[in-house]
Image (cartoon, rainbow, N blue to C red; front, side, top):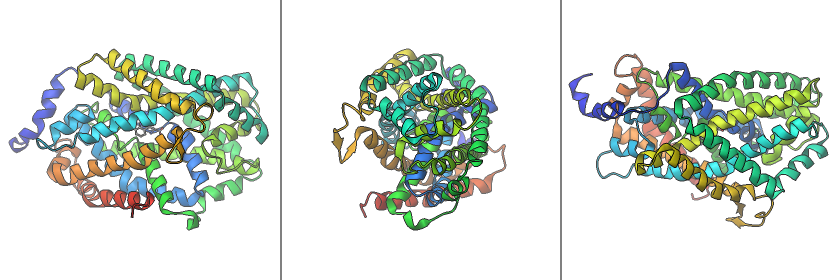
Length: 465
Ligand code: TRP
C-alpha cells in the first residue's frame, strides 16, 4: 500500500483489529450474499409483478434497470461496507468528510428495513402456513376455486395471520442469536442448490402443460404498450429489492467481506444467479397460469394459488410441494435475516447494546409494525393511507421511494465524494487485481448514469414531473 493512501485505510485497519464476526471463506461470501438476494423477491414478488405489469415488456425493463443501476449500486455498497467495516450509519460517517450528513443513507435504510420486514415477515408467514397446509394435503388441486379459497381463508383470518408471523419472528430471532458466520452461512450454503433443482423440476412439469406456449410468450415476447412511467418505476424498485440494495444491507454484508474477495465478480455472480432463480420461478408459474385459467394479474396471491396446481399434475406432488414450501421458507429466511441484520447491527454498534438485546428490540418493534401488515386482509382491511392498505403502502414506499433514493445517494457518494482513486483501489483489492477498466466503467455509471436514471424514473413514476 502506498503511503499516499495511508489515511484512507486507517479506518479499516483500526476496525479490523476490533473483534468482528465475518464470513469465513470465499464461497461463504458468495453463498451468504446470494442468500440475501434470493428470497421472496424471486419466488413471490417477481412473478406477481411481472404478471400484473404485462409480462415480457416488464421483464426487459427490469433487466435493463438491473444492469445500469442495480449492478453498480450493489458494487458500491459492498465496497463501502468492506472498506469501513461497520454498520451503514457508522460506515458513511467514517468515510464522509466531517459534517456531511451521508450517514442519513444508513438511517433511512433502517427505516426501510422495518417497512420491508413488516410485510416480508407476513409473506414468510404465508409460506410457513403453506408448509402446514401442504402437509395437510387440502390445497393440492388444479381447481382455481379450491386454491384461491385456501389462500383467502388464510389471509382473512386475523389470528392465523398473526400467529404465523410471530412464529416467523421467533425463528428469525433464534437464528440471529447464533451469530453471523454460523447462523447465516451454514443455512444458505446447504439449501440453495436444492431449491434450484426443485424449481428446475417444476419448470419441466409446467412446460409440459397444454398452454405452456401461451405462458412462455407472455413471459418472453415483449409488448411494450403496457409500459408506463409507473411500471418502469416498479421494475426498477424490483431490481433494488431483489439485489437487496438501497438501504444498507449490502453495506452491512460488505463489512463482513474478506479483503481478498473479488467484489465485482461476486456481485456479477450473485446478480446472474438471482436472475436465473427468478426466471425459473416465472417459467414454473406462467404456463400453469394460462393452462388452468388463473389470472396473471392476481397480485400477491399469484404464487400461492398457482404452485399447488402445478404440483397436482405429478406423482408424489404432495411430498414435492411440501419440499418446495420448506425450501422457499429457507430462502426467504436467508433474505429476511439480511434485512434484520441492518437494524440489529446499528443498534448493537451505535447504542452499545449486546447483540441479543439488539435482536430482541428489533423483533419487538417488528411485531408491532408487522402486525399492521398481518391484519391488512382482515381487521385492518379498511384502514388506508394515500389509498393504500398498510401492506401495499409499506411495499410501495420502500421499493419505489426509499431504496431508489438510497441508490442515488450511494452512487453520488462514490461518484462525487469518495472519488475514482479510492474506488479503483478498493475494487482491485489494493492493486492485486487488474480491473482498472472495469473500475472506470463502474465509476462512470455511479457518477452520472445511475443517479440521473434513478432520479428521472422516480420523478416520472411518482408523477412529480
Ligand atoms: N432480496 C431479498 C429478496 O429478494 C429481499 C431483501 C433482503 C431485501 N435484503 C434486502 C430487499 C434489502 C431490499 C433491501 O427476497
